[in-house]
Length: 153
Image (cartoon, rainbow, N blue to C red; front, side, top):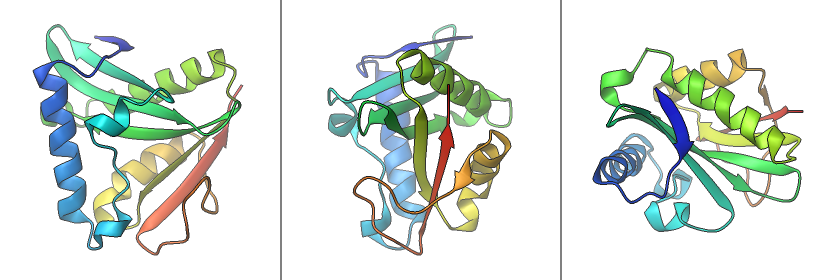
């Protein structure tokens, strides 16, 4: 398996991301609490997007959105259904952390859901050393959101 920067043009990654946004809208009770970026949002200059491929198959993806010169937000962490519970998310997260440190970032933060559906994601981030925090960047307190952060480098 190989992780590389992705230009978001392959049909497989487009399908994975469109299903990600659709699922976030389906499982989140309040539309204003869905913070998943669509394809246009992920194609912005402040975003770096990676995909993990197993040959020609997409196993998962993740991105960072730069907040400032030392702080970025993790976005669009997603594992393809066929690769769930096989360590893909942990591998992408470790890659994002290493690449972010290489880019000179010293802090990564994220927003995820507070519902039971998001419990596996919260567990992954806690195992990886993230801690709960207050809303950051442009986020506001929301009972459907959980905010986490981690110092890197």
